[in-house]
Amino acid sequence: MHWVCALVVCLTATMIVIAADAPAEQSLWSHDTTRAARLVSIEADKFAFEIAGKQEPLTPEDFHRFGGWRDISRGPHVLLVDGSILVGDVLKIDDEQLHLGDAAGLGRCRFDGAAIPLSAVRGVMFQPPAETLVRDRLALKLQTESAKQDIVSLIGGETLAGLLLGSKKAIAGGENSGPLPLVFQLDGAARPMEILPGRIKSLALNAALLQPTKDLPRYWLGLRDGNWLAVAELAADAREVQIKLGCGVELKTPLVTDDELAPRFWQGISYLEPTATKLTYLSDLKPAAYESKPFLSLTWPMERDRSVVGGRLRSSTGIARKGLGLHASCTVDFAIPAGSEAFAAEVAIDQAANPRGSAIGLVLVRNNLEEAWREVAKTAVLRRGDPPASIRVRLDKATFLRLECLTADDGDSGDYVNWLDARFQSKAN
Image 1: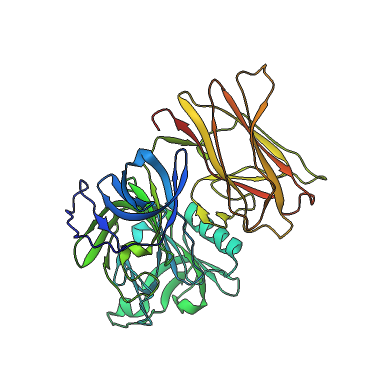
Image 2: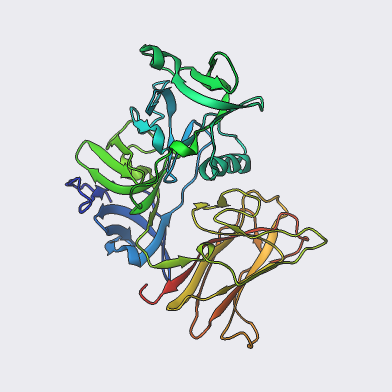
């Protein structure tokens, strides 16, 4: 079926419209089912999906996630203060802005020509590591650590601390379509030095100069080309899509491009997560108890919104923004928030696990501290590469919930268990 929709949007936060030309079906996680769906349009806080051949309007309270996002190893990746990630060449940096573009002219930068205020930039991965876990750790370091100076990490392993003065020709007033050398004042050096972008692994900017996020995102948007956006406002007309991020950065992209990966903007949407849902994520709560039960002697921590080995929460379906990273065998207990009606999660072995990684996930509940735990859900044996196992249980009168990870049939080697989007759902959902 071919959908053709006129796009009528005003730039205020009260109206957002996207229309789609039958993008591929993806999983739509509502609060009690998982269905195959196509995104058709977004208008204000109303989302239209095509499900089983019929168009169905949904509100943010009706679902918590659509699709799955995957990052890419091709860079650079510009990491912003609101968590957004923009993919494109850093053409130049001046006193106040980073200029994003497509140096090779191959259409590899969706937001070609974007000028990003430096106060919104946490850092840049100029050469993202090919190995996903190494890339994840570097990205999370840039996004969470507060550098007290500008820090340049070179390909060879050397780290330079000092002050970034900008790009060479940008300082001199020249113009160049390709990436320009960066001028860096090293601590204690008499003169600034020039560094070619090809020698730089990553750049972390002085956290003291960053501005806090201005607006909470209305939803998270993941694109097939690796861009990850905290969207505060989105508008479209017949020619282009205009996006305002939570950090205040404004972006523009053509509605129709020559990009075979995503010839139309909405076909490039691989992930959609509204933020207005009334969910309580377990990663935002303090556990009542946690116990790691080593197979021999090695114990493991519980990680929030990352895997137990410090990477993003990866599964065969993509990357999850929220969740718990655990290692079998272990248990973690939570007091159930008042008003919670159900618990839900998708459980998977992290993609960083070795091929021997396998585990079983269990959910147990009890009504009070004196009562014994009772099992209410159990997965089959999970292995790396398997699709996540969906769990949803009604809580009834339960006041405590326990997640348990058990080793399966091959010891505990690589038993990295991700509880993706582990959440309590309120009665309003």
